[in-house]
Length: 297
Ligand SMILES: [Zn+2]
Image (cartoon, rainbow, N blue to C red):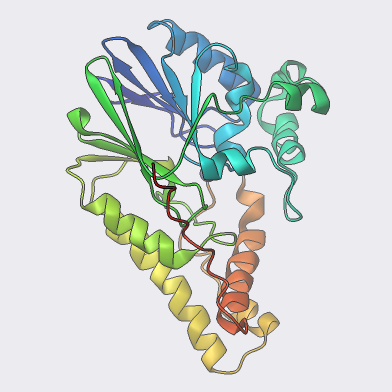
């Protein structure tokens, strides 16, 4: 585990997302949970050593950020954006989150297998939200402030957690730091707007969804990579390439490695990133998902 400021710790070197916590005068607040069951239990015990966990906030619905919630259920107040709540552990045609999480156990957490109940028991207590919000919300917890900012793009319910007293933002997978970007189920234009919104904050530390903590300058690096993907696929479409030819031409595997433990996914990510952008750029109508306005109070 790495200390980012006097009050912030994160883990960037274990398979799954970067789970983090902020220590307030009232107790710790968790941001995302470890995907691996034994790490989730280890983290829970360690963070509770600083006092009862005041809130657990998830930055997105992807399984690597939420699977560990099961081990926190009933011990804290779980807070989700509506977009996370709607998709929480939902089985989509492209991914069964429970099966995907279990795939990591034999290689990365063999002793953790015994901690996972069978599927229906897991789904009965998986750590869904106690509080669901739309748009943005601010939590005042003791002497620290948590601005939960809706920053859709990587996922529809994506949020950034901005703690102004620490000049730190937790971006979830709006930032893939020095590891390859998964954009196949994303809206890249919204994602770029999200980066602009985060850039406007007063920040020193960017805690990404994956990879090492970065200074604010890394936001530009992430934007450049998203634009490179878009531009390369747009050029392939303009050149009249088929979907298969586009996938064969546009491949950024040499740029960044895949995050820890998922090296075997490299070609899967490259193919689906290119294929998703190809489908978007050749669709008869826009496939951008609507950025719904939060309901008026
Ligand atoms: Zn992730």
